[in-house]
Length: 170
Ligand SMILES: [Zn+2]
Image (cartoon, rainbow, N blue to C red; front, top):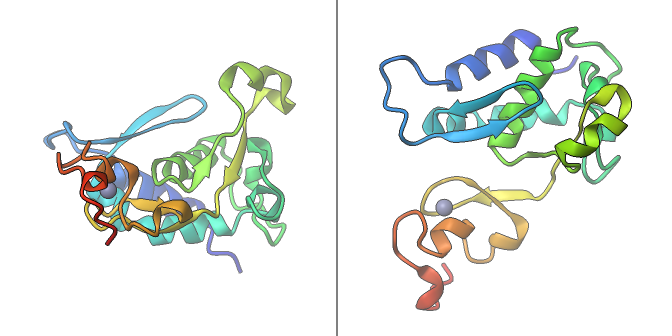
């Protein structure tokens, strides 16, 4: 039985959006097919493990190390060949959450989508996320793990402290 579940995807997606009264100055943006959304960074981060689990239930064809990427249209199925949702909106919610957490990439630019099946993009569930940044807690890729900081924190773009300038590697 798959952990990929349409109502759970919808619940996480809605919880990661901002409420009316919240300060929206700090946000994580994700650009999907029809929607561009701004997520609450803290709540998004709190669901990171679960989003990773949900994405891992997509068919092998979507996984970077296995199939390398697959059409959005095939994302209604899970890796047990069971249809987990019939709604494109729900599939897009999952990919928006994945892109916002840097666990999904869209390898082909939008101007090439019309040449793809159904005019829909391909998505890849990346396997390069290997840890979290010591300063901001965002996921970091394998190549960033040796230093323990994401690119922004390493170069002082987030907190103003440029760690690359004093040889700090921990
Ligand atoms: Zn960082």
